[in-house]
Image (cartoon, rainbow, N blue to C red; front, side, top):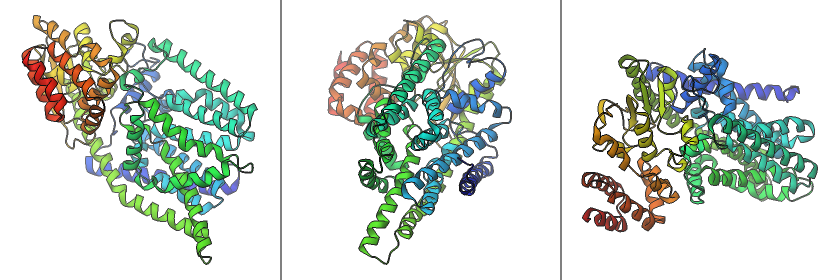
Amino acid sequence: MLTKSKNIVPAIAIVSVAILAAKFFIILELMRNGKTGLSSDDAYIFLTYAKNFLRGHLFQFNIGETSWGVTSTMWTILIIPFVPIGIIAIKSLGALLLGFTAYFVFRIAKIFSENETTSFLAALLTIFAGPSIFHSISGMDTLLFALFVVASIFLYLKIERYEKVLLIMCILSPFVRPEGILVVLLITISSIFEHNFKYFLKFIIAGLLAMLSFGIFTLVLTGSPLPPTFYSKHTSFNLAYFETLLSSLRNDFSLLFFLPLFAFIPLAMRALSKRHRPSMVLFLAGIILPFGLALGSGAFEPLDRYSYFLLPIWAIFSAIAANSAGKIFQNLYSKLKSDCTASLILTAMLILSLYHLPEWNERNITATEDINAQHIAVTRWILENTSEDDIIAAHDIGALGFMSGRKILDIRGLIFTPALKSKDFALTSVSSDSFAASLLKKYKPNFLVVAKSSYPFIWQDNPALDVIKKFPARNTIKCATSFAILKTNFQKLDSVEYFSKIAPPQLMNNPDFSSFWTALSGGNIDKARKIFSHRRTTIASILRNNMLAMSEQQRQSLAAFLMSHIDDDTLNIFIHDALSK
């Protein structure tokens, strides 16, 4: 792709811009925080697996325990040689991937718009719009997957030349991220519309091989054909999440949200004509990828990270829509040149993106500062005040696992393989109070590191836990308001009875309640209220029945917690009924 001299210059220019933009963010982060870091604790989970790979401990987070608690196998493998260099190297790799992603946007936009200037502007829009730079230096697999999506679409448009490469990518798609199977689905359906039945059969086989190989891979490592991240973060399949996805796109990618919608008209016209059949893949990408993400991701949070791969597609749509608008304006006013009009539209969008870029720079700085003030600070305390034999239970395990060298009991379920193999733990109760309580009761760790907002039941009047030290967030943008280290004391007789009564597993088996409680306990109050409004009677009834199994003091605590966030007559009636029993 880079062999042709006419593509070398824009490739170098686009990649250089992406790297320089990311470096500028990193410099500002160093100036404010005095050191660099990562804006997500999950990034440290990748680093831990990669570090252990280097030491010969394959597929191990805790040394000696096989697990696989990451969303991207490919990203984990890719960062292995960069781990010894440091976090700056990981951030630089993400910036490089952003440059490659923008370059493929340029190539695809050029195919459809036939205008190098607007295509180049679409590439710049990919770099500077919304969360691009933020995610590129987060240490997460976000940009790798975005690159995979646009590269796959480009290779499909050039399938006669890159058929074998694309088939290999399709087989490996779920190893980039499980959602990668959506790309195989997109390409397969596109080949049907384009009457390429030869390719259709090949992609069907590639998709089946992808699901089979990935299923066997996760089955061997975790005891389940689905990855632990599915059980840890997913609640239910629900069309309501499509509305959440659109809201996320509108809020985070607002500059790219409205104009690209107009691209569906010219794309549809070209896709349905025999001459422009290749347009079908891009037309379907704007439909299949968002719907597939919304249906398949359930209550995955944060949605902006998982939906980021749609942004480069939206940038391509922007170029197409701008060129179509330019032709319309030219027809209305012949003195206007369509190319100039399209370039002006995209330039205006780019300027608006640059105007909002400081907000994302601030978000990167404050999120990284919070991670350093909480996760990293907690890890240092653990290193100074615990022994190597101590077991540390935690909700956020990334920095702890990467830096502490202690055995980590993951109460969220990402790396806790026995939870997927044992009948003692209900899969639907992963990432809930009941799941965490079951683990604490059975494995009796020495310390617990947790945010109160994530597991409120565990904190309430718990005789088995003593708060040792709190770590408040400085900004509360990315992190919980307060982290705490708690010392466990399982010698107290009443602690066993207490843990047995916390949020019974059957409570989380109901998808309506599960999604409601995940949102509420995670601090997403607006989302919790929306879910409750759709299923108020069911959720209120479950809460009432659960409260009846609690002590009087626990009922009062839970009632106060619920009524402080959910002001609803139906809920109040059920709560008062439970309190009166």
